[in-house]
Image (tube, rainbow, N blue to C red; front, top):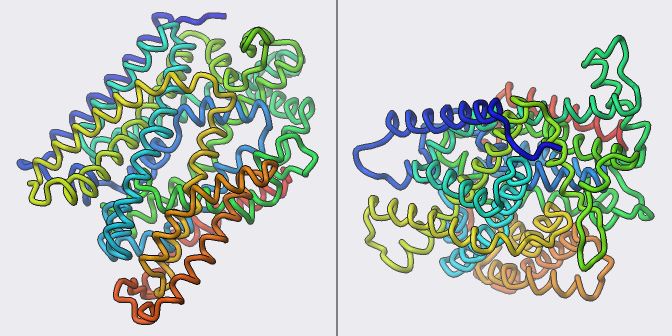
Length: 547
């Protein structure tokens, strides 16, 4: 197996790098202002188009945790892991219809700012610290670790060199501000999808060739269709979206909960209450932001083809004798199968040129995600920590400089911590589970703040304080409870506590902090409605076919 990039690969990768860096510099020069402006740096206010918002959402979301982690989960549990992607498409519609109007009408730029306006500064600061810790030590760190692991496996360069290179590349893009990130993400998504489809094409043809399934003299399109059919034939257990309780992977994806339970908390918290994501839309008008989320929803439907099918293909080939050594690692003298090796193995089989394209796609996904995360860390730290608690009179230029320092420092911390993640089995599941310790509390605080005027600051503080202890308690009391179901129960308990605390406060009847919600805010344009119906129809068909 070739673990090195060849000259053609370097040429393709160099073209990608020059296009991204050159376009980023062009955008920076064309859109930069004479004086540094926080709204411009952190939000790219008014300059992102719907297609830039949609592409940036996907580029920031899809990273090594999907390419490597979700492909590894596809190897282990099959198509069911796609529910994170396909349910996200439905979630983006909900966020576009109900969440965005609230944020934009109230001129919200950061999630802690919303909490401060709706509740008080204490709630905002507590959650800002929570988010910073989560973004730096779970998200940014895992993206950098998985990215460096994948790039190292493909290129043959050392893990450390790849980690430093990715961090530096991301810092360079991030220092240009959100407008540079947003527009370069369009190119990143182009490479991401093109390179990802090349890997899927290879995987399906490999399966077809392995079982002698190529028809008509080796027609590659027939080979792909044959490969897809062979996957379902050779691994039918890997093509069920809803697991029964006797399925060994039920604890990770517990049956109908992925459709009507805790999966909604996972997705609504991620797509609707997450600075990292909503930041792309907060600088636009409502129509542009909604169309951007609709575009992202369509791209989400495509993602399992790119990140899950290759993992299933690797599983089928491994089960039938291929990749036996490559899929193994030795832990304490015992050989174990490492699902997260599935995607890098396939990349190393690509021919020269295509391997460079897939390498560029993976790098694009990693760098875009790192840049988006680092920008959000800088935004929250600067606007919600530094300006509020350290220097209230800080000038616009000074805040931008602090943001840039926060970007560099967060990437350095992530690079120091990242190697500690080396013992993970399925990194994607690790990220979901540990993010899930605070997701129910965050979502409860937001959803109650949006739609129940009587929700008080004391109730929100209780919700923030209870999330982690309740999650840990349920984990120990009910060790066999799937974490998605655990999130659902924690959410229900927190909402009940928040309702009781709010009702006990007589002042909540005329809560001055309540949002003024006008039903006209939720009126939809005909084009958005048609697009949303199409997405829902596709989702209904997919879940019916692969039930």
